[in-house]
Structure formats: structure tokens, C-alpha cells
View 1 (cartoon, rainbow over the protein chains, first blue to last red):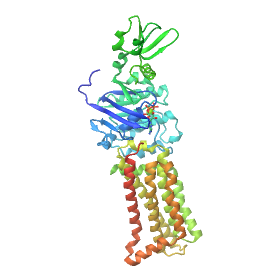
View 2 (view 1 turned 180 degrees about the horizontal axis):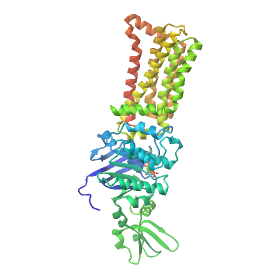
View 3 (view 1 turned 90 degrees about the vertical axis):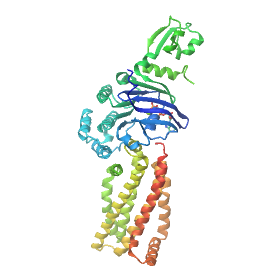
View 4 (view 1 turned 120 degrees about the vertical axis):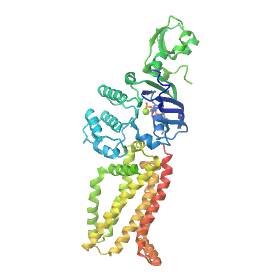
Length: 293
Length: 215
Ligand SMILES: Nc1ncnc2c1ncn2[C@@H]1O[C@H](COP(=O)(O)OP(=O)(O)OP(=O)(O)O)[C@@H](O)[C@H]1O
Ligand SMILES: [Mg+2]
């Protein structure tokens, strides 16, 4: 999957920094090429929502640069926002609005708003247009936000935990919608989530953020190949070798941990290796290890 | 410009749940005028109602996290503020027109004891007072949010109210004095223009405050 050299970036974040009380987003950089889905993962409080809020100018950045569709995001704010669809982790419409009111309220902001498409999406998600927002469950509200975000045919979707509150069926539906959305290769999706199994299905790129810093940003396959889970008996490793492991943990019969493949050759050949997954990578980094400061 | 009008529509839609209250107000205003035999009460009540509507905009915005919604729409931050002031102005104008209609109708049935001219002056001065109060309040709402600002923002409402009720005729005296020396009836519009001036100034301050705010 190495098409990145000649495809333009639909989203580019360079050296982004922002201090919020005791938390700091520190020198965050990543890029999403056109035509791909990027999963944005990290533990609670890692800075995912903060990064997304900076993109949307909900927070002012301290340093750095954000480019969307190749344009500086503040200079071309209006033009850019007409072309993006956003879903945040909590609903942001007036409780007393019906789904038709929402359409009245937001449709005039978009030249490409398509009423029939909106109705189709609502029907697809089994949402009754005349129902008030306060009568919806959390999952239904998320579906509604996804419907609104898709109705004006955006070129970039920015989704902050869109699957939170959705059941397995609805999550699958959403993944299917994203897949259809991506058949047009000029589009892109940034998708922050906790439910990493969703990403295994659809994501092309993964960006891993931990305590406000980017640890990894690369294609999904490269990331999964880069890290392995290693296991072995208690006395197999020297202290030096143990320090190479990320999230080293001892239990009664042995140890386990995560290892960057590049360091694997320093470990004894008798060690057991297993492929990793995103949850494993996230958890191990959170437990600490070589990269932790 | 287009998106600012779209924002005004969004704002007015956000008041939808209170529409019954706002329709009911003119009726109440007429009843009170009739009971107290003063037409200007109707006009003043309409204006007060518009002021409440303006603060509701901010309360609803905060309760429903509408700041986030605004940031997803194709609007610059400063345009959000300007558009909000346009909404406030629209609401005031609706109240003004309804107030004007009410005193005209009430006079046609000669319920009140004041002259039409006196009521009209009361309406205009009232509009200025309301514009002045909301101009003071809105920057606080933008800076601190509705909940935190509510206490501070109502101070100018109660203080001058006390003063005005102590010297009830003062605004009218000032108005008559100014009218006397300039000797022109165009001055009926003066409070309205001064009100718009206050809103404009307040808008400039709010733009500045809201641009920097972390949402
Ligand atoms: N306005 C603020 N003032 C101070 N600190 C803040 C503010 N907003 C967020 N933070 C802090 O920034 C950190 C990152 O928050 P953020 O919401 O970006 O995390 P997240 O990765 O989205 O987490 P989650 O997975 O729980 O949604 C948290 O520690 C939070 O306490
Ligand atoms: Mg978050």
C-alpha cells in the first residue's frame, strides 16, 4: 500500500502543539493521503479529541500547522468546513428539535445539501424524521449525527468516536457506509475510536497517540508487522533485554511484552513470538516501556 | 452574508420550544394594559419578553453544546458573533413592531389614558434600554458561558431598574429636553439609533472575546 508518494494529502498536521492546563499536545504530526481511512487511536485522555478540536478551530493552537485539502485551515475556514462532515463524541443539537428541524437549521449552510439523501439515510438507520432528539437513545443520536455529516456529500469525514454507543449491527452498518463513501478515491476519513476491531476492517492508516505525543503513524499492515508480542520463561531475558520490551509484565510462570521487530534480533531465539493487534499495542504502550519518558 | 442569515434562522429555530410562551405574551400584555389603564405597559412587556428571548439563545446554546455545532458549520468565529447580534436585533425588532401594533390597537379602542405620542416615546426609550442591557450582557455570555455569566449579566438589569423606578420620569425628561433644544420630531428615532450603537459596540467586544475562547 505505498501509493502515498504521488497522492496529495487531504489532511496534514505538522508540529502541532497545544497546552491545556496540565495536559499538553506536543509536536503532533501526521498526514492522511487522499483516498484512505485513518484510524486515530490512543488511551482515554491521550489527546484525540483535542487534536480534532484544533482542526475545527474549537481550540486555538499554540504552534504548528494544519492543512486540510492542501489549504491552511484558518485562512480557508469557510471553504474547508463546507467540504467536511463532522461527528463528535457527544450530540450537539437542540434537544427539542426534530430531525426535520435539524435539516432546516443546518441545510442552508451547505450548497450540496441533499434532502432525499438525508431522508434515505434516516430511513436506513430506522430513524423517524418527526421524532424529537430528546426521545432518541444515545446510539440513535450517533446515527443521526452520522446521517447529518454525510448528507452534504463531504470530501473529508472527521469522526470522533462515532461508534461509541452503537451496537455491533449498527457499527457494521457504519463501516459499510464508510466503505461505500471511500469508493470515490478523492475522499478521506479520520476516525478516532476505542473499538479497534472496527479499524481492522476498514482503516488503511493508523495513528497512535499517547499522552499528547504521536507514537506511530503508518499503514495498518506496517504497524501490525512492526510490533510482535513476545513470551517466555522467567529467566530467559537479561535486564538489558527486558528494557527493550514495551509493557513488560511478569507472572508466575513467565513474562510477556511487546517488541519492535527491529530489536528482535537482540533477544534469544528460543523466545515465543505472536502477532500483535491494536489493542495490544495500545495497552502495552500505556503500561510503559522504552518509549515512555 | 448568506451563512449569517442561515445562522439567524438556526438561532430562531433554537427558540422553537418556547414559541407558545412568546405567542402568549402579547395577550398577557394587552390584559395588563387594560387592567392598569396604561397602553405603554403592553409595549414594555413585549420588549422585556424580547430580552428574555435573547438570553434564552445563550442558555440553549450552552445546554445543548451548540458551540460545537457552530464550529462544524461553514462560518468563521467572528461571523458567529455578528450573526448572533443580528438574531438579537431581529428579536428586538419583532418585539418593537408587535409593541407598536399593540399600542396602536389599544389606542383605537381608547383603553389607556396616556397620549399615543407618550406611549410611542415610551416604546422607543424602552427599546434603547433593552438594547443597552443586552449589549452589556452578551459579551459576558460569550466569554463565560450562560451559567457563569448569568449572575453578573443581570446586575445592570436590576441596578438601573432601581434607579429608574426611583426617578421614573427621568428618561422621558431627558428625552423631552433634547427634543426641546433640537426642536425636531426625527428625535423619536434617536433612542433606536443609540440602541443600535450599543449593540454594535458590544458586538465588537464579543467578537474579540469569542475568537480566543476554547470551546
Ligand atoms: N479545556 C480543557 N482544559 C484543561 N484540560 C483539558 C481541556 N480539554 C481537555 N483537557 C485535557 O486534555 C487531555 C486530553 O483530552 P482529550 O479529550 O483530547 O482526550 P481523548 O484522547 O479524546 O480521550 P477520550 O478517549 O476519553 O475521548 C485530558 O487529560 C483532558 O483532561
Ligand atoms: Mg475524546
